[in-house]
Length: 102
Image 1 (cartoon, rainbow, N blue to C red):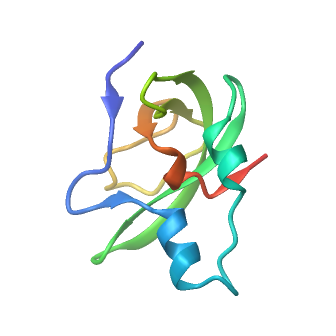
Image 2: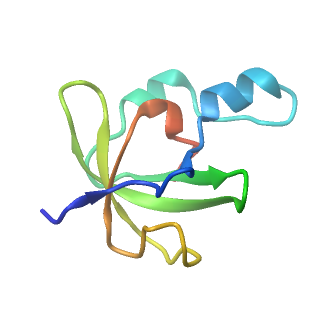
């Protein structure tokens, strides 16, 4: 497996659970059960954000699940430049970062 990448600081993964807590009427996300039980091969939408750039959401294919509950996924679409993550990169994230499932 290639190197696992993450957002270039000060960017970070979007915390969907926190956004849903702050904006329950306008920000929905999959149930905790769905976010925590994705299987290898599933497509999951996550996002990256920073105060300077705003945010971007994108799809990743689940490649592995780590014993501590985090996922490793392969980025499945192109992102704008500057995030430090590109198509086919491997990323690691938590269930709270899952914004949608397909």
